[in-house]
Length: 255
Ligand code: MG
Ligand code: MG
Image (tube, rainbow, N blue to C red; front, top):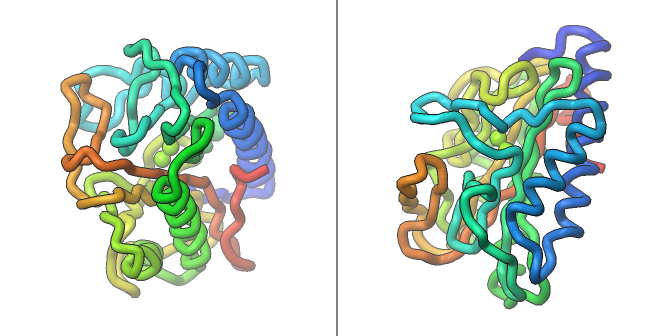
């Protein structure tokens, strides 16, 4: 969406702050022995306690055959994104990495954010993968400037990731957000500078690089949602919702 008024921006910032707090709580809860379904329950409870509505629960993305059945998307180890926490009995174990991605609707305004966190002690390679993905997100955010193009964001991410040798997932990417979960424009995590739709003042977008330890190729599970690396190596994902202001990008889902 384009945040047309100060009220729009105020509501979005409040929504973002609430979501940031929830992701922080989820991060702290992601310890060995925790079930993924309990993380989903925590996310849903916190969203509802704030008087808000889970944005992903019952949402049907374009092309999906059924509505998404949970509040939280999880991504354990080789899962890139969109693992369903309510349809498996997985319990987190030491050394896992888990992506936590959720969204909420606050007074009609939607924000979307995600993080990948270590469970207990993880190996150096996992730490580097998560760190690089997080940095790639911030590099992409910095490239989101009024008058620029969508391709500037993907280009910046791609150039940043290149020396690390990670695969950048191409089948999924960022998107406009604010009134619906997914709005125009699509924000690929690769691209050419100066190409693609123009970035406008007060445009609200979610940027979300997904990096694989190995090749960029992914496969989709039969559940219609879970996306995994084709080579079985691990993947990480970080996401923020931002407002592109004339003073630069403003991250609204960070606390
Ligand atoms: Mg998300
Ligand atoms: Mg998103």
